[in-house]
Length: 407
Ligand SMILES: Cc1cc2nc3c(=O)[nH]c(=O)nc-3n(C[C@H](O)[C@H](O)[C@H](O)COP(=O)(O)O)c2cc1C
Image 1 (cartoon, protein in one colour):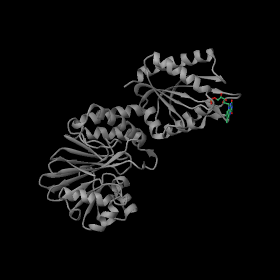
Image 2 (tube, helix red, strand yellow):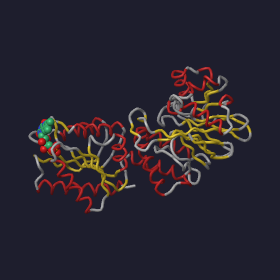
Image 3 (tube, rainbow, N blue to C red):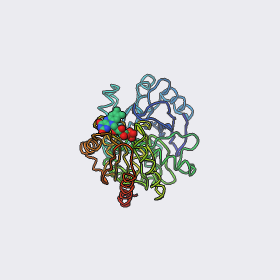
Image 4 (spheres, helix red, strand yellow):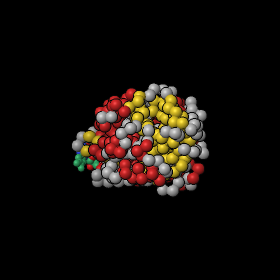
């Protein structure tokens, strides 16, 4: 765990986590940080905590000691969001300090009580409530419901104009030496944009309408620093992450980068022949292609890659009168994550009856995904020249469609 001063009287404690599935589902290909913040006036507050694994709270206390904060003297635990990756340590903290107040929304209070049984220590706050820590450090609280969970709030510190945004404006990705936007190399900026997309699409995508509201709310503050619960701190250009999140919300609504993602699977290589052909067509047209062979890709990577692409090609054969299951499962997962309005084109091989197309239509309909499809091309067995011509024409129509979807 690292301690980083982010402003006078404010420190970040940040730890990298690699060896877990985030939310029990998402592979952390490049890790994630858990960021916790200490604000010191005459009183001391800790904003967001860390996960409650064995040994982790103790590491947090050691880090607190190194910045001259005695955990036994912490007055306030500000719980912006009760999810255990931020609050799990409270169980352990109670053993060393029983004289603290938890500050949170009414929804978080109910969760904290049911998860940790700390009802009597809670002070519920509403929009605009303030807490004066002394020495100029004044916090205010601003609910942003359903930015992930219903309990979430922003905490704003008016002296340093810092917005502690919790899961909002967060990203996956470990941090080793650079913690601030102004320290990042060009490669690190790209890395955190990609990890931001992965985080947003995996964790926040379902809540895009509420994220939009939270973006609007953050624009009401005079902000010098955005300090999220995961990923880098923005102090040089906080607007950048606000703009990125605004763009990610557009990806949720069907817009994307000028890229085509081929989500595909093939049992005996028949559909794969057409995939290879399509790659050449796209290369000729100068379009970036992402290939996702299912079931070999992780769900995390699959969702992030489809999410950011303006156009999608589904290449999948028929299997037992339905679509090749790993591709069907991927599309269902995209439906759960509310990846809607994507421009798409499907082709695939069948043996005798077909059936993949019907299942695709069912999934899209059931999950209200409203994907805008170019006419499907199906072929019996191996694709012949005529089939490939039809596939090429489908790809070119898809490229026309994505023109209006690129952001
Ligand atoms: C387990 C299995 C189930 C299949 N079920 C069907 C089916 O229900 N209807 C059909 O038309 N073809 C079916 N097929 C045939 C495939 O769709 C066909 O072989 C196709 O060319 C496979 O394309 P691929 O090599 O890209 O996987 C099945 C093939 C396999 C291996």
